[in-house]
Amino acid sequence: MRLAEYQEQTEKYAVYPDDKAFPYLVTGLVSEVGELAGHLAKRYRGDENYRDVKKTHDLLVKELGDILWFVARLSDGLGYRLDDVAILNLEKLKSRAARGVLKGSGDNR
Image (cartoon, rainbow, N blue to C red; front, top):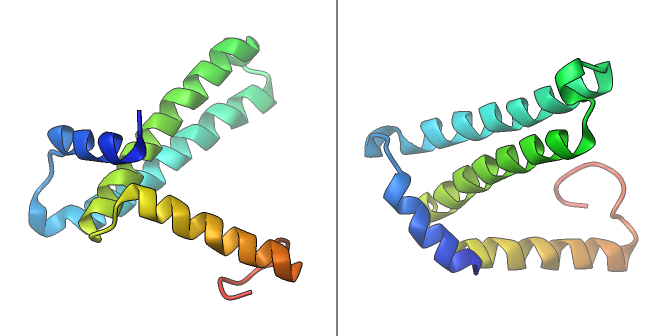
């Protein structure tokens, strides 16, 4: 599946008020990232339900899917195609690599 097709299909499952879309999507994205981190923390802690690497990876992939949904809806709400967001990100990374600043901090390095 292509990103554009995925982004288009996410609209079918967008159930939130239009006037609250941005704050809903941002907080939902953060929540999903937190869920992903929580699964990983439980794996590191050695919780019994997380000892099986395959099962843990399956949980992480499901959370990544939820994260992708929120990113797709945010992109759509900002008027960007997810394909363009991906291209812009790769261009930024290529520029940073060429300038030797992949490591470090700051948006404008």
